[in-house]
Each structure stands twice: as structure tokens, then as C-alpha cells.
Image 1 (cartoon, rainbow, N blue to C red):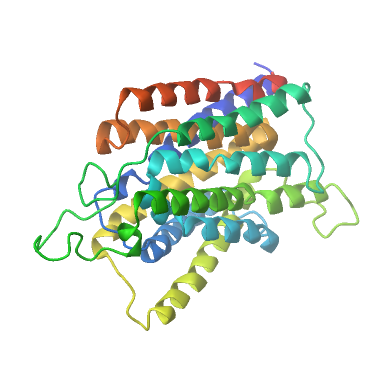
Image 2 (cartoon, rainbow, N blue to C red):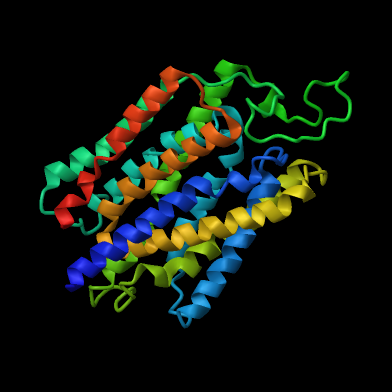
Length: 341
């Protein structure tokens, strides 16, 4: 097996594992109340940093580049909206709209002032990248269930209702009180913004790698192996969260919404997310970001939709099934990777 074939095999295996983990990492949280998500994001980011620390030790502590932390700041900012997205439009649809992640990440590796990654067939690559985004818009056509306090229609909620004669959703946040139309607007808007932020997370790393080849750059000699930057990336995530959560506590007048029962599921979710991100770093190195981004950002929506169908039953009806099948037939256009073969 040649070096190129080895890179392709490793890249596609890493991409496949990343897709499964990204599509499943929030599943442990589906049966627990998480409120507005601010406490949860702090738990997630703590778990992310701890797992990345272990990975850094395994990699023998490569040089730490502070600029790589900026990408983590983008990721942590986008992560704040995850719970709100899941509550308003569901996990599957939220990840699909997050295909803006694919477009942003693909574009950042192609243009945006950095050394563009070359592919053998640019038109095919452009077409494939756009298909992964088109699949999201097809999925948006499916209906979104009403916001009620039923386990079948709300993905994240508490099972402990103490008094049904009072507030129909005890302890509910402002998100739970939105109408269906308002939920669609809020959820889709947040998913698009988060997708753009997520799509920018690797920009600092790509910038460092590109400038490491220039003797006059402060990044001269920096590692070309993407995984060497995972700890700096995670440190940016953790530090950003460490700023947001105290700010939130101050805003709430030292009375934040805390949910102890979500701590362990949150840690598990953060661990799964970090492993998926490490796989993504490996795929970026093996395939190139211009190839890996459209694949890895489009695929998790399919996995999340499967969870929605078989666990939360959020996606129901023949029309939805047909739309979903059509959307993911488009996702199967992995022609973005073909130019590397």
C-alpha cells in the first residue's frame, strides 16, 4: 500500500468515526433538563480540555501555539447555542442546518487569504461542497413539532414533573415558551451562526501551517501534523467557557440555573466530542480540509436523524422520511473526495 493510499484509508476511517461521534455526542443529554445551556457548555468544555490534555501527553507535548486557541474561541462561542438549537428545532435538523459549517470551512481552506489547497478537479470539488449544503435546505422543508412538554415532541426535557396543575412546563426556560414559528426562526438562525463559527475553528491552525513554510514568519518550523494543535484548540475552548460562565453568573445575579443530574452525561458528551474532533484533525491532515470539511459536517446530520427517528421519534411521517432520504442521497455525493484518489 502506497503512502497516498494509506493517507486516504486513514482519512476516510477518521472521517467515518468523526461522523458517528459528532452525530451521537449529544444523545446522552436527551433525557436530562439542561435549561438555557450555559451550565452545560461549561461542563462540556471542561471535559473537552481534560481529554485534549491526555491526547497532548500521548503526543509528547508538541509546541503550544497560542494563536491556535482562537479557533477554540470560535468553537466555544458556537457551542453556547447548541442546547437552544436542540430545544427549538431538534438535533437532526440543527446539525443539518449547521452544514453552513461545511461551506465556511471548505471556503477557508480554499481562499480567505491562505494558501489554497489544490485538487485535481476543482469544479467537482465545488459541486460536492455545495451539495452538502443543499441537503440541509431540503431537510428544512420537513415540519417541526410543536413545543410541548411531551417526551415525544421535545428532545431535551425533564422527566420529573412535580405538579401538573400549575405551570405545564415547570422550571421551563424562555425557550420552552416559544411558539412553533418562533422556535423555527430562533433555532435556524442560531444554527446558521453556530455553523459559521464552527466552520472557522480550523482557520488559525491552517494559517499557522501555511506560514510555517516561510522563513520570515513567526510560525516558521511549526508542525504540519494537525493533531499537534488539538491541545491549544481545546485550551481556547476552555478559557472562553471560563469567561462566559462567570459572566452568565453575574448576569443572573449569582443565581445561575444549575442541573447536577446533567454533569456526568455532559462529561460523556464532551469526551465523545473531543474524540470526534481528534478524528477530524487526522482527516484534515490525511485528506485536506477542503475535502474533509464537506464530508464530516454533512454526515452527522444523518446519524442524528436516525437517533431522532428511533429514540425521540421527533421525525415522523412518510413525507419527512422521503425528504430525509432525498437529502442524504445528496450527501452521498462524496465527490469532494474523489479528486484526491
